[in-house]
Image (cartoon, rainbow, N blue to C red; front, side):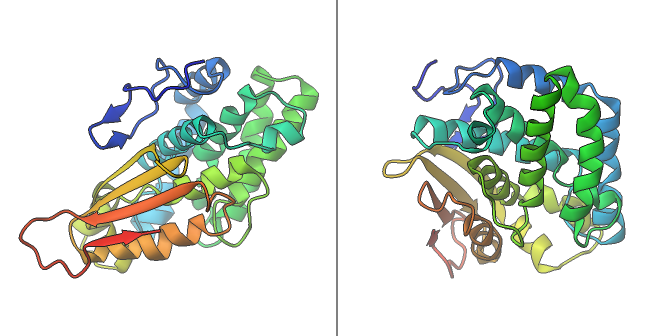
Length: 275
């Protein structure tokens, strides 16, 4: 495996999308098979559409549907790759006696299914996600695993789903990746629907202030997250949401977060925030 950063899936300011054809710091063949399965599974895709009704249509929150899931999964796999390049050890699959190739599969499934509990209710949705995801995994995982490893994979995926909110602390590195990556979907496009409907809550306004989020290898830590803000409202996303997700994730020492106000000629109340 190539351990040098790849240009594929990158922009000038860092990587933003997982590229299945690129070289990665982990075995990716099984992951790429799983991603293709997910993309073509009608039931999974139906959940991703339906889970936005309570979140956006009824509650006026930011997107929690198909686009959110795509972004979180991309960020999670990029974050995982960078952490692997930086020598960070992952314990979820390893503790279960599973293979290294199963680490990224745990992350991909957890990122895909973490918000399906929204079809029941926005409030406490991470708990509703567990039985719904369990039913899906009972059908899907046997396509890739025998009975014993299906059970072990199911447990690790559900653990990561449960811990994506701050009320439960992750016990695995894989779960920590999901928790942080969920908060990395903060760019202005996420709040487009509630903003166009007139919502001016802090989540919507602060998301509108975030221009771009990019991930790259750090100089002193494995991962540097760069956030470009258009105004000071973006500080809420960085300090109140992302900081809360990073705290207790187990990755606090491995990720450096820098947010910059990039709008020229504006009143720069905040020039730079660093976590």
